[in-house]
Image (cartoon, rainbow over all chains, first blue to last red; front, side):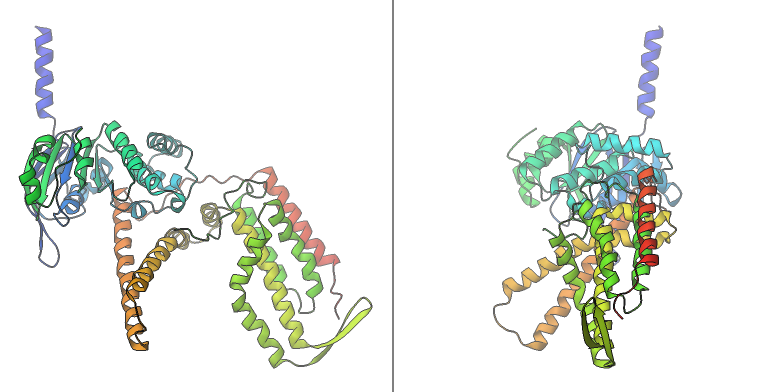
Length: 256
Length: 258
């Protein structure tokens, strides 16, 4: 029956579709020999919102850098089925949008427009297309009228939103965010939660703030001393007070 | 933290603000060259030259109090140079202004001329940076053929100088919070060295992060930008008025001080 055939072929295609991120036995040592990540294996499907939780120094930021090919260790990192290597770094970075912890590091251009346009221009898009991308990205993060502003004239919340806009303009498949809620007041944090919740991309959010993680993520990966300690449903992992306390974390006081 | 930005009035809207940055930059550059090249006895003409930048500042809605504060801020460097003139050139000089006449020295004349030229050129420069957004100025410089690397460096300098000042301020606050007695010169020097070292290391750290942010967005060593500069009829009219003003003064106004 045609219907069954169609359905069958859909299932086969879905199974063949690669994960957004596949990390296989990845290990990385700092230049001084300290192990930052040890034997990390992680698979993330497209469209998932994953919280990378763990205490300070657990290796969360390093793992995010590994996903965009900024640290090279032993093991394999595949983005949408493509293994990261020197030749395809440009493609990988167009797929993986990295949002750094400090927005001041992310916003390095004289104006917000130039900052948001930086990625699309490097992707080789034409001027009109770049302008469209910039307008869309700024609209999405609620900074539509602020393209001409200099980054140092923005508030902390606006800087965070602007940093995300610089990534969105490249229309990545995956967005990694390092402590995105840092130094935000509750109103700006809630705005950020709404914004991130509305995005369709795969999100990998490294955070120490369990309430922030609980509201946003459907899956949690607990990392400590460079090892994955637990990986599963965010609700289940984050409600395990013994596990959370053992690794210097706390049970969230709010849930999604 | 609040900073006294040099371009804090550049985000206003006026006819002067809307002018193309390239035209304003060239006009100010030529104006500065003309003023600097005036003879040392041209103190009275400088007043006429000052009308140009003064008009730009007024039309641009720039508070004169802010302008004179900025001039005072940088004046110590010029004051040292100007005030040294009377010391090494004491040749008598007779000056006349209408029915009045005085006897001073050539050194003093040079001193006043230097201060006059400094004030007039500073008026023009402040007029430029207060009515032009820094990024437009950078884009204009790039269009005018200034080496791209220099323009990028200026852009980074402008972007991160305030971040650096903030950090230095925080380090000083941390020191002040724990410094409960006078430590003596050597200990103070050691502390200052450690503070500078900390600032340096954090700056390197920031530079590395910026590099990551740039690479993450596909930077491959080639700087690309979207130019939004347009030369309009108003820009040409401004250039024409500025050229007529400078040419008129150069041809028709002669020094009255002899």
